[in-house]
Amino acid sequence: MNHQPPPVSRIGWDDQKIMRTRRELDSVKAIMKENVQKIMERQGKLDDLVERAQRLEEASDVYVKCAVKIKREMSWKANSLRYGIIAVSSVSAFAGLAYSFL
Image (cartoon, rainbow, N blue to C red; front, side, top):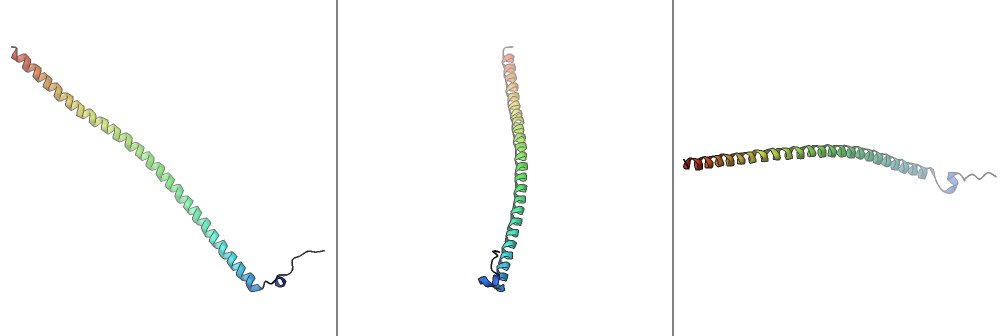
């Protein structure tokens, strides 16, 4: 025997209910498509954000290296000036001491 389901009209469904169900289904499908698009857009934005964060990290590494180099140079200049003043003072003091023995 053939076991086919009874026709729609026999199980209590009428055309209006079927159409309403189809509209609801179409509405849900449209919402889901929109959600998938939003997810894809969000993923693209996240990828861009990750890329920008990596570039920022690289730039900050360069900045730190440059700052350390400048700090060393400034420290060297400050120390060399200090050592120069000490050397000139020492030479002057030594010359003054030597002159006093003459």
